[in-house]
Image (cartoon, rainbow, N blue to C red; front, side):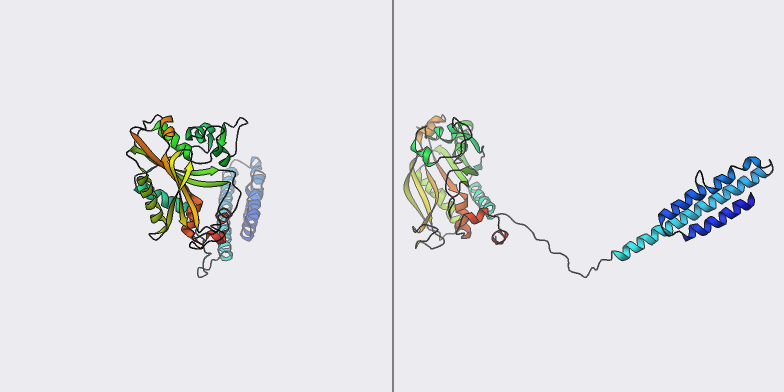
Length: 341
C-alpha cells in the first residue's frame, strides 16, 4: 500500500505540473483527491492492514494529500498569473494615441432667450408663475372678457378636449394671470412662460404650437406709461440699445386700451422681405391695460387698482435675438443649425 501511495504522488505531481488550463487542473484534483479518486480508493483498503501498519499508512496518506493539495494550489496560481499576463499583453493601451473627442452639448436657442428674458423680468421685481396647459375654457376665454360667441374665440380657436368645448389646450398663458389674481394678494407683478396652442398654419413666423411669456402687473396708480417703460427695458436689454420698436393701437378683449409692439425686421432692416411679409416690421407682442371687467371678475376694486398685461412670443424673440429667418428651423432639431448657438 505504501508503494501505491508513492506511485499516486509521483504520477499526480507530474500531471499537475503539466496542466495548462484551469479545467484540466480541476479534473486532476477530482481524479486524485475526490471522493471517488485514487487516494480515496487506497484509503478504503485500510481495513486490511494490521493495527501496527494503520497509523503509519494513514500518516503517509495524509502527507500525500497535503503534497498534492499544495501542488494544485501552486499550479492554479501560476495559471491565473499566466492568464493575467496574457490578458494584459492583449489589452495594451497606447497612451500616446489621441483620445476620442467628446462633443459637449449646450442649451437650445429658445432656452437661452427664455432664461435671458426671465432674468430681465426678475431684475425688475417680477415673479414667475405657472399654470396648466390643459385649461378650462372658462379661464382661457370667459374670465378674460371673451364670452361664448365672441368673435375673438374664432380668431384664437384651439384644440378642444371635450365635446362640449369646456376643456381646451390653452391659446395663451393669460389664464395663469386669472388664477394669480384670484388667489394671490395685491400688488401683483408676475410673468407666466409656457407652451400654448392655436390653429395657426405653419410658415416662417407661425406654428400651431409655440411658447409665450405673459406678464401682469396690478397695483395702485399703474398707467400705460409703466407698460411702455417695462417693454422698452425688455427689448433694449434683449436686443441692444439700437433696436427699433414701435407701438401701434390694437384691440384685445381683455385689455383696454391695447397695443401691438413690433421690432424692425432683422432680415431686411425695415426695407421689406418675405420674413416680415414686406412690412419691414415683425410683430413681437400684444399688450394693454387690464380691462376693468377682468379685474372686477377676480374681485379687484377698479376704483383703487389698475394693471397692465402683455404676451410675448418666445419664438419671435429668439428669431430676432439670433437673426433666424424661419421659425421652423427652431423645431427641426437639425444639429447643423443648433450647433451654431
